[in-house]
Amino acid sequence: MTAETSQTLDRGLRVLKLLADTDHGLTVTELSHKLGVNRTVVYRLLATLEQHALVRRDLGGRARVGLGVLRLGRQVHPLVREAAMPALRSLAEDIGATAHLTLVDGAEALAVAVVEPSWTDYHVAYRAGFRHPLDRGAAGKAILSARQGAGEPGYTLTRGELEAGACGAAAPLLGVTGVEGSVGVVMLADVVPERVGTRVMDAAREVAEALR
Image 1: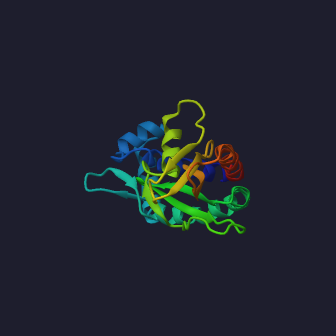
Image 2: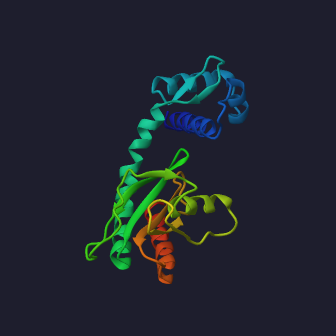
Image 3: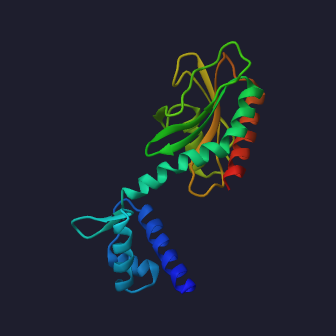
């Protein structure tokens, strides 16, 4: 019974992964070929996933990821935020700048955790929930650099792209399955000190290790 249940769960998760990797959905026949099982098994898997709103089928019969996945996804942010906080606190206090963890949300970069330094006279206000295009700001550009896959990305520096007078430095999270994001700082400065880039990369590695 245990082996049978595990096999069914494995197939269901594989269905979700296959559907998540396509923008156009998949037919029962396509899923049957990809999974190496007959159509009856696929119908049963889809029916079960539909009951939990994890899969939906359009008018053409193509299966797509359902809105229930979004509800599960919302629970990921608090877990990721909790794991990242120690590294972000250390980064903010060490650099004296606002540190943040940013994740991809569709075509945007979403700040899910922010830590402000405790000892500075002033710092950039940056709030969890802040969104911006991926191609603007250090956090988004660091993520895009990791997508290019040309060796191990370093860090990204930007100035004034999201707020006048503010500089940003960010490094992508690497090697974390299912999580695409970056760790960075934002500061008011004419020039970002050289050590900031290295420190941001170290913090990104710390967060990635905490999430593995």
